[in-house]
Amino acid sequence: MSGPLKGLKIIEFGGIGPGPFCAMLLSDMGADVIRLDRKADKGKDRGPAAFLASGRRGVLHRGRRSVAVDLKDPQDKEKVLQLIDGADAIIEGYRPGVMERLGLGPDVLLARHPRLVYGRMTGWGQDGPMAQAAGHDINYIALSGALSTIGRAQGGPVAPPAMIGDLGGGGMMLAFGIVCALLEARNSGKGQVVDAAIVDGAALLTSIVCDLKALGLWQNKLQSNLLDGGAHFYDTYECADGQWISIGSLEPQFYTLLLEKLGITDPDFALSRQRDPAAWPELKRKIADIFRSQPSSHWRDLLEGTDVCFAPVLTIEEAAQHPHNRARGTFFEREGILQPAPAPRFSRTVPEQPGPAPYIGEHDDEILQ
Image 1 (cartoon, rainbow, N blue to C red):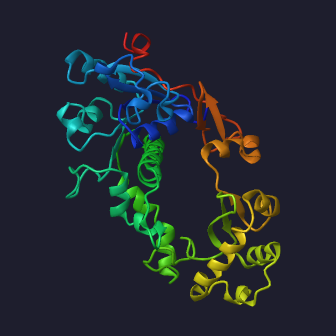
Image 2 (cartoon, one colour; image 1 turned 90 degrees about the vertical axis):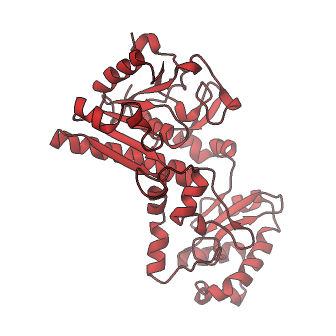
Image 3 (tube, rainbow, N blue to C red; image 1 turned 135 degrees about the vertical axis):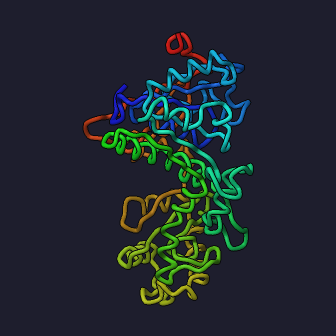
């Protein structure tokens, strides 16, 4: 195992979504992550039959070891405590109060292991009036304000598939928080609790919108702003073959090049009108007609790699085959499963390619005994 986090041991209490993603990020970077799964599921590879389940086909569970335990069994609980005694951090994603009822709350664990970083992943946070309510990604990003900024004027808000909430606002924020707390513990010798709430993290991801609002460049109306598909020079367009492309010609020089490449001489597209929101709807209709007149291959040949700021809208399978992504190794395949490679890149402590997700309890003999 190699990578910048080599030498760290993390104990992950099994869950779905943001917790596993956090553990995956840390494991990708070289940490030794041991996942605690339910003993009742030992040996299973539930694959696609269960939502985001563990097993060889679970991308979010790649690169770590699994032991099967019953947290209500005193003997298993003692084994878990011994594992945590030798760990640098834990990851848990239960509702507030569950770990305390299991006798595994932060007061107990930090008393045994004062340097432990106790990472907690929830939707609403450890406190607040909604802390005990059930929820999912779509709810967290709705309450954070993020969902109100995504979608089409005629279709309403559209939730990305668990990317902004569970993964970006949740798992990634918890991974960042754990690493921050581990660095601080090196100086203080003291661990602490990291309270990562998806609603907090998703709100943090709206920083760019808050910035634009402060500058008077954002209104609370879908598809009416510079970066939400309101502008004709920053949106996606359908081509003659039904494929889609993206244009991001924000800067004047890029916009000028876009008009030149498309052969647009219509004075309505003049540079002086580029940032006039009143002109955008009509200009969007005109430019949409242009892109709809040719297949996506035509526009790729004409625009890809230029300063127009262009890219085709690709499926994950197509993205894996794009020459740029292939050159960088942005995706890889393990046991027939296509998945993204670890990121970011390091010049010296280069992480290994992650191993497959473990079967539940696969490493019981190796770890518990």
